[in-house]
Image (cartoon, rainbow, N blue to C red):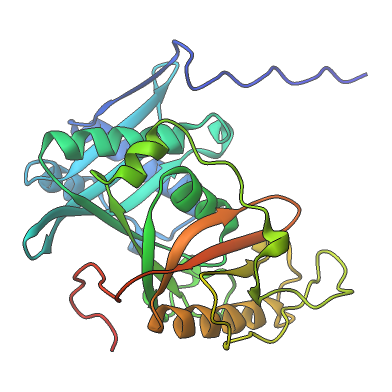
Length: 295
């Protein structure tokens, strides 16, 4: 009989420490982590000498150490948001063997602590709308909001798409780190939203079998305070090369672009048997400044 694997240690255990990264040796470890986590070719890796100059010119670069080994990091750099002082967060990476310990969440909260020390107000970043795990962390746990959809933002870069040949669409999200919303999230995520009574702008076709679930046609005519947009719980589990990933992206893109234009924003995320974005109608359409934003 095979022995059960040892239980993973909690993030609150004494063997986990988060601190600033300051040396070239640690920056080289960040390059190693990039390669392990994202399988990027060398051309797409941020090199150690870039981290060196970034560290000395205002970047936030924090590492998570497990049993003394650098096992994850978060990286952000100063960004021009007009009168709002802020950073753009470009990397959050955790080695596969220690994922599930809460390191990603801990790194982001440590990033916020450091940003507050620097009197910043806003941290932005991008993520793929079809990645449910990232959506749950970013929106439900950390409390970001957003209403900016960026089509094929990183171009035809194979390692940045959910499937080869599928555009690298992204949300640009806003972490208002001094807001009451984010302060409340720091104490813990809110109770899950019950999806049964909220109208769906997008959901799977009924009768579809896992994992080959098919998106339905987006309903772009809803006029209610909250709506839901469904995505697959694990996009990587969809059959590859059969057009399903592209179909989900196309359907979700239509829904998000239509409702963002009408004043809805990302407000929460539901994870469970099925995964949904919760969009809430808000006053106005103000968004964080973002140079080069598509019209």
